[in-house]
Image 1 (cartoon, rainbow, N blue to C red):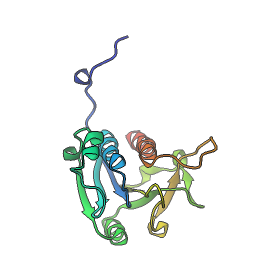
Image 2: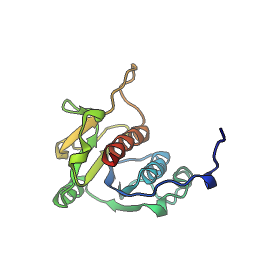
Image 3: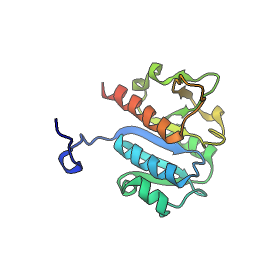
Length: 167
């Protein structure tokens, strides 16, 4: 067995019909990692709020590992307006959030949707208006903690979504 170097690895390059909306993500490290994780799972586009985190920030640049130019991204001013626009473009809006109606992510059928918008909330307050979501999914946890880092959650969610779509 031999560990491969970055130059020896060739991934299947593919884009999935997935858009990520970051609802008030504020931490530069989380924004940078959002790009890195989203790019590695073939996400089409990322939306960030216009008032949060400059993409030229040193911490964003370091944690994104040069993935920012590789993925479409845009800024938005009003979360509600963005979600209404994405719904009008026939996207299904799915929040990665623990609600009283959230379905366990592994039990959710992502294959039945043509275009998926995955909404991430802020670490502090979650998604600002869960009533705009079509559905919400949660990641089952077995420890005493009730939540995990938003980017860890994103990685798990994108793994599950792309794995289902790939089948």
